[in-house]
Length: 177
Image: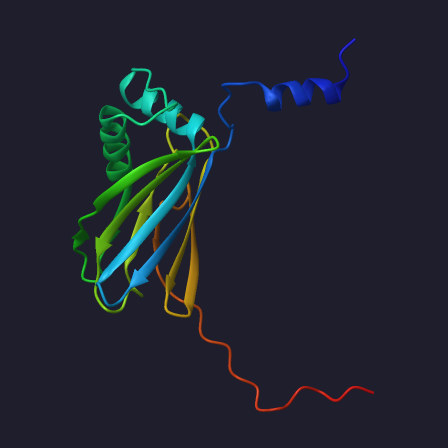
């Protein structure tokens, strides 16, 4: 007899299974001197492979990077991720590369931006196909400011707004009794 714990473990550890609720995690670093945002986004390779297959009905194995696979991944990201300036102009993404590491695909790209990135609008639907629930998380840093944007089926677009800085306390640390 199979115990419930053994069944759950077998399902979770089964090779080739995509996640029922895929998630991506990324960071964008604002390089003021160069006038760009530099993105790095981590996607589970099996989920990306599934998404690429859904996109074309063609199996795209992500066991190694080839020019064809990199081209498909680039097209996939460009179709599902965008940046718009506060003036409403779509910002061109410049593909930097793709990397596979321990079951994850890392995509790298950048976008030219102004000296101030607050107010830029981001749209993300990475892994948001196939009728499954999904989440994309992007943490944007500009100098000491950081904000995390969370995307999902109910919110595919977000406008960057950094939290207000915490006021510095003028009081010294409280005395210990």
